[in-house]
Image: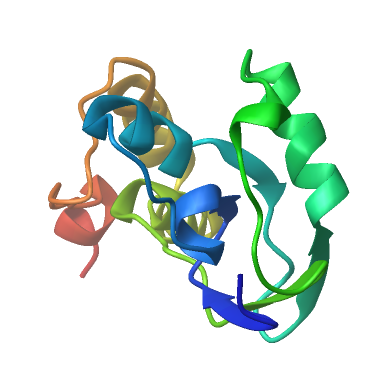
Length: 133
């Protein structure tokens, strides 16, 4: 394992911090995806020890005796950034629209949101903007 690695976040997996080598590809892929916890805030780092990794493996049902760890005892994991999906961003424009919408518009928007009819690709036209002169 290297002394320093970088991840995108928001979670850290085994495969992101070291090479997982072995014979059974299916098991190796499962181990690569084992979650080691939350990544630090972008620009910051967390330290993960080999002892902690062994505990995580035991919790996942693996025997730490089946693994050989090479490299440093503690890996520093720097978070370069976090992935943001359009679903994460959707509340921002909706809240902005609600801030300027009339009471009638808010009712229509609330109905659309609760029925799942608003998505990141939805165009919203406020009724008050159509009737104002």
